[in-house]
Length: 239
Image (cartoon, rainbow, N blue to C red; front, side, top):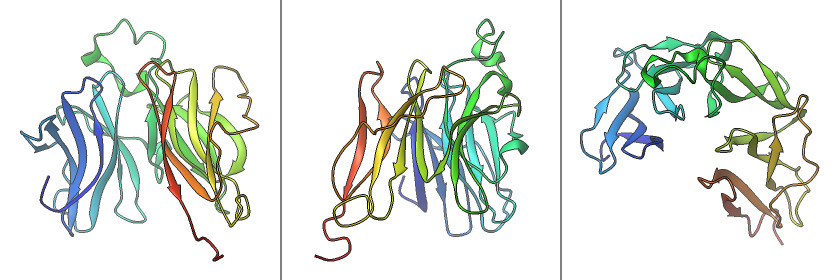
């Protein structure tokens, strides 16, 4: 992509296409293109509304739907749309929040449906829920707004929730505090098993270091490893 602002991009589960948020300074939508960058086309439109942007696309694991965040300011909302651009639906239970990931476990009765026949109620969406004080918990909910669960209930500053390929665990980044490292703040990667109810929150991270931000965890396809970004802060606070 060469024109306008190109935001977060996500490969389709089958590896044939890429979903990307693309925009100019006025408006922007979600685009799909082939893996080689060809056949770029929009699947959402803002209808020419100024300062209206569709961002943060997330695929369902079967590749049938894409969730995205509509950011026009105070009216921020979350939507899902089919891969071909049809079936656009707003998720009112998630207004003002964007989807971090969508789990592979389908709701009861959905596994027997052809992928193209599955509705948004078949999927579990994972997201961050913030309160007025800025404290965040990690939650999940079905696409139709039912079945909400609080997965990580201890308020903290969490980011970048990712579901394991088998749907049994989540990896996420957690801010450990302004004095967690030798010179200042740090974040670490944690993993929690979500099959229990309530979820037992991990007591220690899986990553370690000093004045670093560990972010953007990504599971390997077999779920045995996690890659993440290590953002080193060599001079935080001087010294």
